[in-house]
Structure formats: structure tokens, C-alpha cells
Length: 332
Ligand code: SF4
Image 1 (cartoon, rainbow, N blue to C red):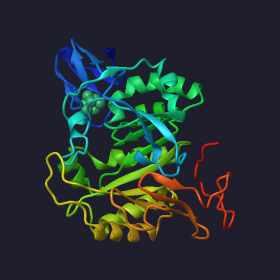
Image 2 (cartoon, rainbow, N blue to C red; image 1 turned 180 degrees about the horizontal axis):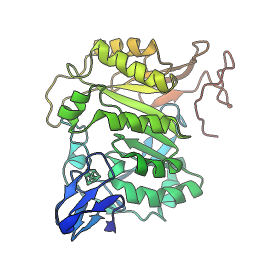
Image 3 (cartoon, rainbow, N blue to C red; image 1 turned 90 degrees about the vertical axis):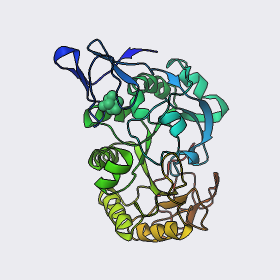
Image 4 (spheres, rainbow, N blue to C red; image 1 turned 180 degrees about the vertical axis):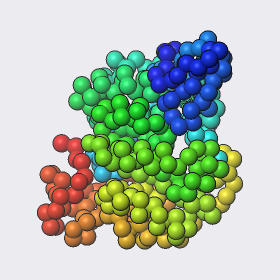
């Protein structure tokens, strides 16, 4: 469905500049932005992906990944086609970097559709929800009003003003922090690092739950210095923010070999020096996907793939061994 886009400036000669994300596309009539969803229609910026989803599935919340937000829950998951970054290693390139088949979902009907299968709400995921901005702004309030939650799995590549407007509507974010080196963002993702860091700072200072995912690519973002810089940045915000170190596999335009287990183990060890909640994803390493009490070290949640055991945490979200608050949000 077509809607007029938000956040753009009209320039001379029917040219528009989009202000939704830091790419800042300047579009002459009939041209599309990098995300392929916003285009200049005779001097107006339009979006034609409103409500158009590539799929509607029910996923474990652990798949997002979110480990400390309603562990063990199921969440309805939808996503638009397209992305505002162009990562060489994109894991979902068939739907993010190419046009994909979509179906329309009405925002008013979303809560009812999402509440099936004991789902706790809606995750805007799979591709980049920022480029679905107008739809999420309209879909999220009825979801919230129905007592459900809104989750965004995002690259964080958005400008501060539109993010500010979105924050009160979203209960939890997982932000992809693809590397701590600006050159990595420039060459591999065709974007900039600093706006992503600013997004993370803003979410961390908000009421929303925040987790981060860092995809570890051999030779590109897996040095000790890379892991140390990541740990220091997260610790400067809140050492309890969960960080998922995810194994990379060759995909799309990148042919670098898959991440060795030893590299993930090294990253895990370095991050754990400063951070309380670090998890290895996409590869199983014993003990590296469990949640531990930051006060006494007891296992709070044991994990194997997407299955979990809530063994060390009581109904109030406290450690059964020492009674410390864990910060884990449970489904009641
Ligand atoms: S949202 Fe799309 S059109 Fe707007 S600046 Fe970003 S990539 Fe360009």
C-alpha cells in the first residue's frame, strides 16, 4: 500500500531529501532511495511498503535473539522487503537486497492475528524495520493497546528524531552492532558507525529493553582490540546489556570462511571481563549460551538451541540462589 513518507525535505525542482535514516538520499523525481521503498513522486516522498510483509510466522523469542525478554515465549514475526544498508555478508539478502513477494496486513487486524499461538506480541524483524517506519508507527499502538508487546530487530541505522518518536511504542530492541570500526561500516555495510552507536545510547537511556548482536567475521571484526572496544562501549552504558556474539557463515557477496569456535570463545572471554550477559549464537559452546547471576554466578537460564530451562530464577525474576534481581523480564 502507498503512503506519503514521513521525515523528508522538499528541495528545488521537485527534488526531495529523505531524513529517516543517515543515508540521507537526495532523490530526483521517480528515483528510489537506497532502501528501495521510498521514492520521489513528483516532489513528494512516498513509500509503497505500508503493511506489506514478506512473511507472517510465530518464532521463539530466542530466535530474534532476545534472551532476557520473556524467555521461552513465542512471538508473531513480520518484516518488510528491503534494507537501508547493503552489507556484503547479508544473511537475508534474498528479501533485504532483492524485491520479494509480500502480502498485506492491516494494522488494525494485527493484534488479533498476533495473539494466536500464545504469542506475546509482534516482532518487526527478518529485514530492516526502520524502512517500515510509517507502518510500525500505526501498527504498534493497537498491539500495545491489546496488552501485547512490540519488538524491533534492527540495524539501528535511523536518525534521532524519528527514533525518539518510535521509542515509547517499542518494548524491546535487538540492535545489530556490526563492528566497532568505522571503516568496517563504510566498506562492508555502506553505512556509518556513529549513528548506530547513537541509536544504542538512546535506546539504553529509554524504558525499552535492549540487547545487542555482534556478528563475528574472521579478519574483519574479530581482533582482541575489536572485542575490547565493543566491551568498553557496552560497559559505558550498562554492563548488564545482553550481547550476542554470533557466528558468521559465508553468504551473499562475502566468501570469508565461517567463524571458528575458538574465535567465538576468545570473544566471549574478553567480553565477560566487563559484561554480565554474553552469549554465543549460531554455534554451540558449552556454557556460553546460559545466563548467569551477576551477583553469585549461579546459572539462571540454561539453553540448548532455542529450548530453555528457567532453573535458577524465581517467579519474581530473582536469583533462586542468592535473591539478587536479575533484570530478566518474565512472562506472567
Ligand atoms: S530511509 Fe531509505 S530513502 Fe530514506 S534516507 Fe534511508 S535509505 Fe534513503
